[in-house]
Length: 265
Image (cartoon, rainbow, N blue to C red; front, side, top):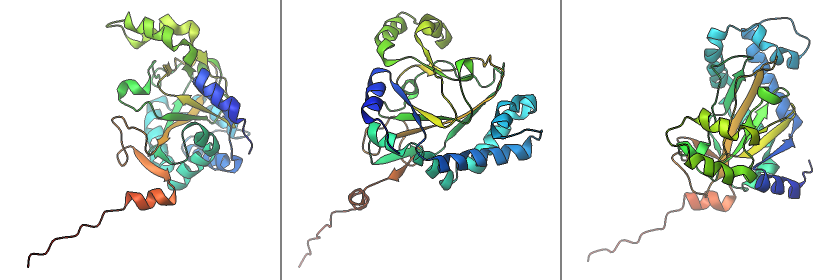
């Protein structure tokens, strides 16, 4: 699949994010099917297609069991090697352009199910680097439904980051919500369709608020970085795993310089 390399680079540098069409529809279908099959067994209601099922999920699920259902879905499907391989393949070319071609991937893909008017799935304004993540990571955010307005997430464009820094310095002992209210008019709500993905700079403030739309949002996110770029508090093994290494890198990682021992005569 051809991608507009110049536009992706320009968007990522100027805006801090870029929305692209998935690069492999077959792998997207596998992801969609796996989540649909799991949820359909747990929550049964009449529907015409997968999109109708996902969008109307809130009308039939027991909200008290939502988080346990979400965790089981992650454990049963999102941790499988094939699922993670498919997730990577839908954005491989874009990642190579923005991050590099020798990569590590977050071991556990995150999944969000945000119901209308549900406060339990809120993710207040934050930047991942505030909790120790490396600035060298990029996030791939993949929706399984069309997302718009409060059914989506927001991000502060890179062009407004200097303004945010000034506001941030003046907000000592304030909550993230207080700071969000100060920059609310500058954030960008991501309008994205099923069949597209968002790649964004996780150093920029982002989050969501209560879903005021009439549909459920189901989305995933996962972090990627160059294997040799600096790590934050999360390293290879505990949080990341290699997914794309060149042959010479595989050899070098396991290489040990032979030591000649002097024999005493």
